[in-house]
Image 1: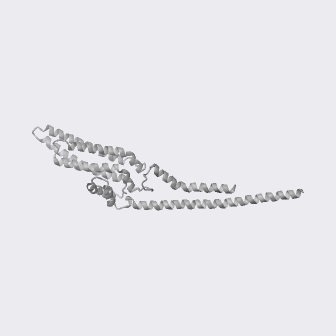
Image 2 (image 1 turned 135 degrees about the vertical axis):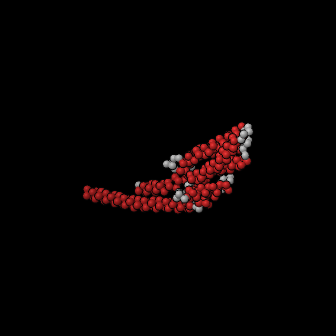
Image 3 (image 1 turned 180 degrees about the vertical axis):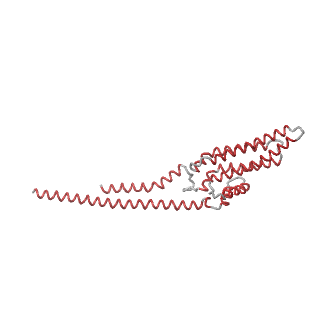
Length: 280
């Protein structure tokens, strides 16, 4: 009787061991399958991402002809005709130094064009002010007016120079983050410079030739201000977002990236959960 019981117990233990062995083998096979499937999913996601990135890079301004992307950017301004010639010239000089055009360089070109035009205006203003001082007759009112205009133009030059210094500073951080961080300060400085020039133009005893120089300066400053206000569009021309209509660093972008990269991991967790349920 005892031998029969021992035999049954032995058979039961052997059966349990066989079940455990089969369960372990099944678990190992399924784990290998799911891991392989996971890597296939990851490789597929990366491949799709790389393909999309290549397409976007091909469409970006960085890959286009220099003259064409300057023309495209100038179309964003109120005065595209006055924008194209000086900006394209500045870019040509920039490219001869084996540098790659980027958003910061574009904003710098606009500042430099305005700065150069202001220098022309200050030269004319200084010339007229010097001439009025040499006159023998009483010209106190005229000289005071031209002196004030001269001061205003110099201040505009200072404002634009400060704005250019901001653009050149702190290259250690991400370019897009840095540009957005200083955008408000850049706009404020350019607006101040424009206001100064408009105030100078309204003064009495300012010659028509000087008014024309001032008007040209205001046009360049307006282009500079407008391109700063459209900073996001300029940045996207060089760095198209992975998902259309989504701004870099925006909450929507973060959510989309989480979905894009997180889905395979969530799917794997789901498969592991089903596997554990099957093995119970």
